[in-house]
Image (cartoon, rainbow, N blue to C red; front, side, top):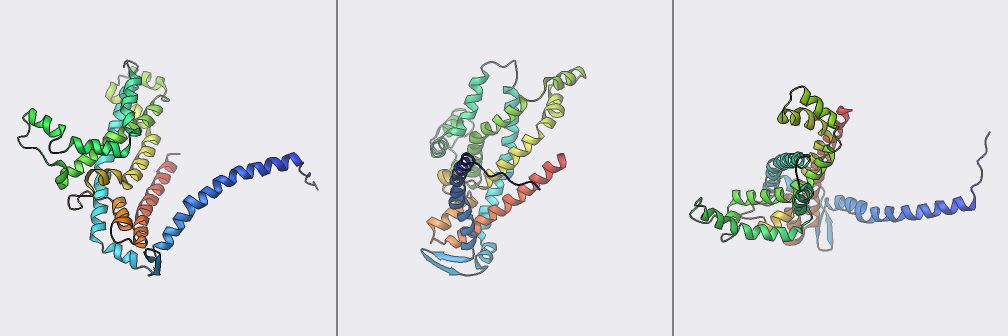
Length: 297
C-alpha cells in the first residue's frame, strides 16, 4: 500500500497562491453574476416597489401573458431578429470572401474600415443615424436632389420606416464584426480544395457554395447563435433613435424591461419576470446549438 508523500513547504505555498488568484475570479463571479441571477429569479415572484417586497407567487407571470405591450415588444424584437440577422450574416460572408481574395489591393484598409463601426460609441452612432434620417437630414436631401421623392420622408415618425432605420443601423454596426470571424475562418481553408474544385470545372460561385460554405459551417452556426442572442437583447438603437416610438412600434424587450424598472412606476419584480423570457429563449437556442454541433461530430 502506497503512502502519500507529505507536501513540501514550497508546494503548499504555491497552492495557496494559486487559490488566491482563483478566489478573485470566484468572488467576482459570485457577486456580479450568480447573485444577480438568483436574486432576479427570487424577485420575479415578488412585487417590488422601492424597498418594499411582497410575495405574490405567479402573479407576475400571469400578468406577463396578458400584457399586450410586452407582446408588442416581443413581436418587434423578433422582426429585428428575422430580418436583420440573415441579411447581416450574408453580407458579412460576402465581404469576407471579397477581402480574402489575393487579387484585392489595400485589404488592410478595407478590413479596418468595415470593422471600425463595431468599436464606435453606441450613443455616438445612434445620434449620427438620427441626424442622417431626420426630415432635413442628408438622406432626404439626397433623395430629393435625385428627384426620387418630392417631400421629405418622416423616417423616424413612421412605424414601419422607423424599424427599417434601426435595422440599417444594426447592419452598419455589426456586419464588420461578423465579417472578422468569417475572414479568420477563410484563411484556414486549404487552398488545395479550391484548386481541386477549379480543376473539376467549378466557377467562382460554385466554389463559394460547394467549397467555402460547407467548411465555414461551424463559424456560421456560431455567428448565427451569437447574433440571435445579441438581437434579442437589443436596447441602444431603439432607445437612442426612437425611444421605442412612434406608438411603441420599435419598442424592444430590453427597452420594455428598462421602462418597467426605471421609467414607469418601478416594479423590479415584474421587470425580473420579463428578463427571464429572454433567458428562456436564449436557453432554447443554446440547446439547439449544442444539438446541431453534436450531430456534426
